[in-house]
Length: 200
Ligand SMILES: O=C(O)CCC(=O)C(=O)O
Ligand SMILES: [Fe+2]
Image 1 (cartoon, rainbow, N blue to C red):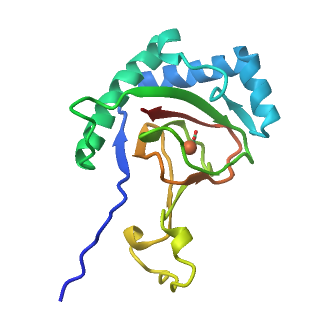
Image 2 (image 1 turned 90 degrees about the horizontal axis):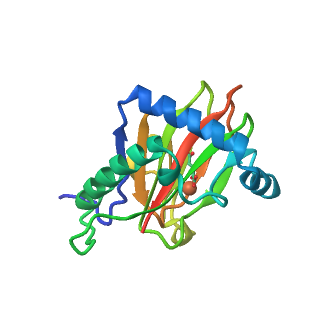
């Protein structure tokens, strides 16, 4: 007898092993938070505890060479992920569509969401102080599981309905944009800084 896994949900993990670039990006993120009044206002209006450039700036790779370097690396990573997932991008590489920074203050979180109108989405972690919140991914079949038994507490990660990934500086996560995720509360005493992005 065998049991085979069907319909897997892939999570791509890689490391950006370039401490200088990570430091440059964190410095740029803080500078944006200081300079971008519209972004600060949007974050406040949407109860985002900290700062995100999500709704205010859409040209970070053109503004700053550190983001341009990052964008090149992300495109290469997304192409590898697309190949691993056997996604047909019609012979082209996934196109980086948007990229934004997130500075989450102590106590801040980001409730469950998907990234509409995108193919691949992901996050790169820049600063992850002790106690910073994990990112939690949800089983996309949750709405269909109303009457099914829960998984045993010792089920392997790939069989669980919720998976927490604890970030670390330099960690890149990439997933398909329909995959719902949330950022758990930042229990650290310092800011948790990440960069997120969407591919078309
Ligand atoms: O910082 C993270 O762990 C993820 C952030 C996120 O989901 C987003 O920016 O859309
Ligand atoms: Fe997200």
